[in-house]
Image: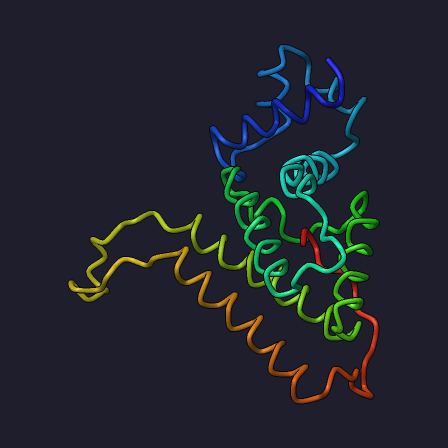
Length: 204
């Protein structure tokens, strides 16, 4: 048993039972070890969940970085879609990811920010757009993964159509990009005077 094995089995357990039911006791039983053995790799359950969240982001973290000359709008759309796809891979993926902080992906975040800046997007606007897109994506996936598809709720109209989560996500994402484009056009690409540094967007 090693750290990577523990994380892999923990993610598989997550897919089987959901985030609320994941416990170190169940994980130890799954690995065929005593529960205290896990403390060799993770001091607390919070540490384990953080490692799981980071490992779950690997598909997105391995996506190609933007290249000079690419259209920033097309890249921004695909980057956010990649984030959504990765969150959807794991059961309760959005809940697992929410509240985490970037650690090993800081160089990728800097690269993306430099790309947006080189494309004419002021740093403050780039930070705000990435933050908004990240939070919008996590919230969208939270709703999607919480949707049980139960239409038998007596409090809902009988003719209420089911939510098309992907279409709703695409519509919201388009509004973010269109809004940023309009903002840049109106300001001539200048950064507002009240610009201030913000934390990098998680995941994106």
